[in-house]
Length: 394
Ligand SMILES: Nc1nc2c(c(=O)[nH]1)N[C@H]1C(S)=C(S)[C@@H](COP(=O)(O)OP(=O)(O)OC[C@H]3O[C@@H](n4cnc5c(N)ncnc54)[C@H](O)[C@@H]3O)O[C@H]1N2
Ligand code: MOO
Image 1 (cartoon, rainbow, N blue to C red):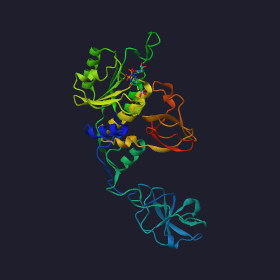
Image 2 (cartoon, helix red, strand yellow):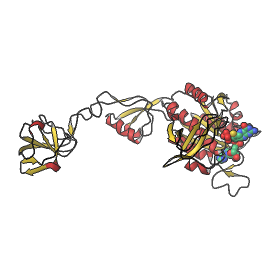
Image 3 (spheres, helix red, strand yellow):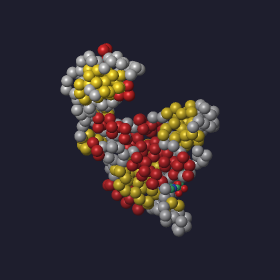
Image 4 (tube, rainbow, N blue to C red):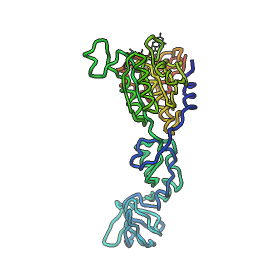
């Protein structure tokens, strides 16, 4: 059975970006950049004041000596002349430093009388300047290709001074939940032998958070004919089909067989991980097909571990970057790991990570608090509270 790392290497090797399109900057939030964004100018473009005050010549300006105020420089309206010794220019935050001046004294230290000004002792030592190019230089890559434009990234992207940007095409995802026992939330209570279908709601939300559009979501019964028809429709509709349930070895586990007639070729099937051993990935008719175990915790852990990297790879993002873990302290001891690589669901408290109480792969209620997955190699020794473990944001 392949390990988690081996499965990810197979995925990373096979996945290709879907393509690219040009969009206006205001439509680029949340999208992956298909090409790097180069700054068109230095920022700041000129040396500017960082504070409201007076621009002066530092070497000849002393506290208690009057200077002539010869003009004003404001953001968008620079002072055109030159400042000499004995002179000052009223200046505001973001305004260009006038020629001749090399220092700004904040207005809290200024005593102004008509067209002259003097300064109280104790100004400085900072020059209150933002030097031209001190933020970034013209031509510098502000946002590399493959970056997802987060809210903070949007500021950097806009600062590059580009109206349009090239982004990766948005992957479309179809989700099929399988099982005779599944009922739409709101309808299970009145139907005996059913339970609310929860998995597809979590997977759909995860796919959308990862930049995809969910174009179809349906539930199929344990009937081969109906499942084959749903598979055909999903392959026609979407770049990536996610099947939940029916991944195991029981008589009613039809998730792989329902794609066999559509030419399914497996990339991997069953992994040495816990939870999620029955997870599988394949290709059919040029589309991706990801099979998640039906147990809701297993479905969400495997969606996090495989669907997110897959969707990143389809959008010029990095598969590996989606799986970078952080060293985090444990707030509670954990026992020796079992024979499979394990992803322990945990919440973060002030002293570190605490495994959620119920680690059953069929559990649903603990998912709410499980913001982290502690990654434990097979057979890893027990850890005490305070020890560092590797964790992935879940
Ligand atoms: N003999 C074996 N039995 C099982 C094995 C095995 O290796 N040998 N693997 C176990 C593991 S591990 C897992 S995980 C489960 C998952 O198998 P399936 O993918 O076939 O899942 P189902 O049987 O379809 O469902 C499992 C469980 O989850 C509920 N479920 C399914 N889909 C949903 C949904 N969309 N929303 C909410 N709940 C769902 C379903 O009712 C079942 O209770 O197999 C073990 N068995
Ligand atoms: O591996 Mo399954 O996902 O333990 O329950």
